Image (cartoon, rainbow, N blue to C red; front, top):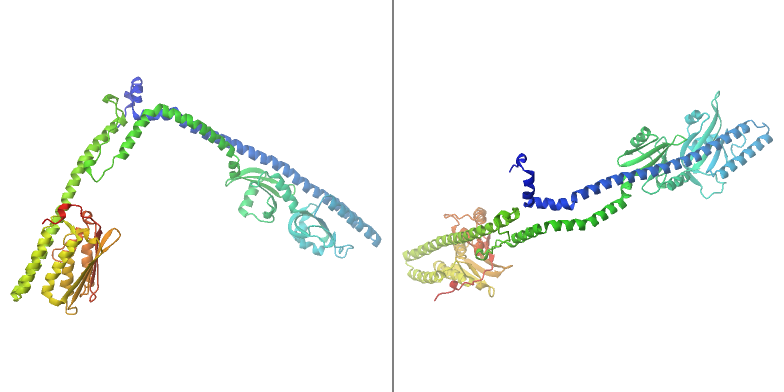
Length: 614
């Protein structure tokens, strides 16, 4: 339905709007301000999150500035000591050439280096002299340049040092054995200096100051406010020299991340939900601080709790306003909902109750809910009438189908028996024919006095016995049987003429040249709320093709008047829900007989009309 807004009179539109269901629902929610409250909460969270993020990142940047100042101070202190040692090395190189002067200079140099190490808390100081020079094999502070390459510095790097320092990272740097210390080895930062004769390219001397990486890790651990924040020093090669998590010392980062840091040196940036602060130290290495975005979000939990408390406090007021403006509306919706839930399509349409709903007496005051309730009442009346008609037609249809099947099987059985009697008369076996007529009379007296489709199992077993008696007269001693039923099971009901077609099939197809005698066993047993009847014979059995055709007819309820008529007829009747919702299963092998199982629901005979009428 299209609404032409241009034709609406604004002053007349408001009163009519208040009488509609949609308008009342909108008013209730708009007055309750659920939408504004949600928007305010979202905006507040967004703004507060940004403020918290800025506060956390600014705090981290300020801590980084202090940390970088501390790191640079330590690095510059090392550089200053290296300058001092370089001056003393120059004095040592130009000391008196005699043995006494050299030993005095060496002793003075050793004392100064020991003083620098203890004063500035260095891990160690290593001085490398030419092998032929006095003191090169001292083994405490002085070593031969032959051992220089054991400290991770290459010859090309020594050539490129010049007058500046070369910083290297070395794993497991060891102290000389004669030095007493609690820590014998450590991962170290080495500050190298060297002097090379430019004319001859001969290394005159070299020395390095070793700093413990754990010292820098302690600086980094102290600077971070939370373990979620990572802080580390990175070499130009991409190796972590010191980390706030010391277990990550000496590890490597990927080339892509290293390239990202090189492209964003001395800047604060974000990548993959992580904020990075990348700064260059005075020795050319990088200091990196990582702040995960999840850490920032976790610090907004207080804000989220505040917003939740605000919503929880506002919720009762919102509910009160909604109830105040829509009490009448919700009560009618509840009544309609209850009426719809209470209306069930039962099996007995005669007792189907019609549920009425309250509505205004004046039809002009009806809104959509009132119209829906009236429509629901009309629908109940219509459904009740239609259901009565449908149930009545369904019952009549099922009874007609059953009677049709019943009327089909009775002539089929009668024709077979009368044919047998005529054969006996033609052969002169009048006594057998007379006995068969007597049994046939008793057989039909028993079946015709039952006016209903369902009869007690005991009567069905009696019908089966009479039929077997008639067949035995024709086959003399070639046919025998036994019938067993569990106690009390004979009082349940069964479709009339259920067993006879199967017995006929056992006799007709069971007797053969290979099986001249047939024994039939009928067992009636209790199942799981069902009755189970088994019919077993030791006859000729069926071929696989015949068995497959018979099973197909049973499974698909196909009644073929020329083939397997009796069995498929029984299967179609007992599978009806009104007559036991049963099933038939057949198993047979050529030469090994046939086994039939009939199973249906336990049905009691409660109709007196189904009893014998004497």
